[in-house]
Image (cartoon, rainbow, N blue to C red):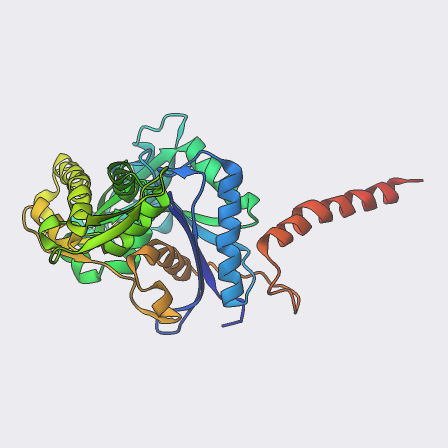
Length: 423
């Protein structure tokens, strides 16, 4: 494996931008080389609302990761989320060409399933994931090529999103100097980092409580069954704290992270927390239990929306493996217990990235799960993020490389073309 054989994931969220650079190991694990975590600006619920702020935040995150890893970053797997995301399961069927399944038959049956999904002009397919094949009606086939049979069926999980929303995000990443190697639905990436194969087989739901949205992904019998995004996340808890305590948004976020609980009855004793009232600057002391009593109703709302989503998809009874929580808000003490109560007592745990080495401790919390999962997907695909660069260029920031490649080189080329054409 060459020095350039490293991969990268870029998680562009409502509250944070996370860049993870890692090197695949021979045993299938990831060696974490560098991480860049910065506050996000210009994104709301997965939608770009201020391009310049988004570009600057991405550049800051990427540059931090590059400096830590001491390698240049040319491209990354980029996460896609937002309440514009929808999914459905589709089926396709073809007759085999010669009584045996060929690679062309597989391509045709997958395309047949994709074509059966209504796709308005303003939407595009993000993923089409094979759940299952069947040969002559016999289901459960994973690799049908070479099998004897006259008919091939497929069940496909198809994820779509708003074309303009996706395009705007990808343009921001490109303008930050990073090539979008693959766009990936965030809960699929997150699940790779925190959900075990045994849980996928039993039936499990991933609940990733992000800043602006809560992503949901259901796995059953080892395959994806359902994905969705709920337009409510941990940022709503922060806003509630800011309004009711009369503090700044920044202080509310800090108080939530340091002293927050998901359930009021879990707060020990009569502990008090000092806050600074916005406007007057007066310092106040409030019960820590009050923070939990403000946060709990909003968290319950999020989890009840997840429950309704699962029931609407008729999947609630399939989740025998329980639920796995991820995202920054899942770190609030008591979130797993609250989720279990809302979801009718199923087992719930907080997922953390696993199967890592190197700077693994730097990404050991749920905040980094999506970025790590994106890097894992790039590793599985063998899509490396490092360019073949001359010696000594490893520390060049991505914005300078972008300026050189897209600003200076084209001008030099145009100048040379004029000279060559001059009599």
